Length: 141
Image (cartoon, rainbow, N blue to C red):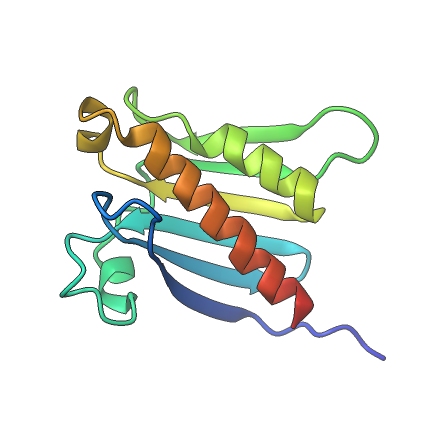
């Protein structure tokens, strides 16, 4: 059976377990042995719809990294863009590349306001859990 070479795009709304956190939207572009992921926060639950508008209004270059799965030892990964206030994409991309064995491009667009409120780490954890669950679903399909 020949491997599938089409590119697929999935958009999913991720609802955090803590109702005080904003909803997250995840866009997965699935390519051969590669996932390009964008995750960002939505302004509010009422205007989120299916997430497409949030993706279109998001910022790809707020915190963007690329990681390759480890072949033997160590990682090949780099930050493509980042701000001084955000550095979560690189280590998360490395964990995802190791877990799924694929090249990962990851853009995290979570506003800095959540860090000042003490919710940044919780929101990032919710985003990573949502990404892992979604990628598992895609891998099973």
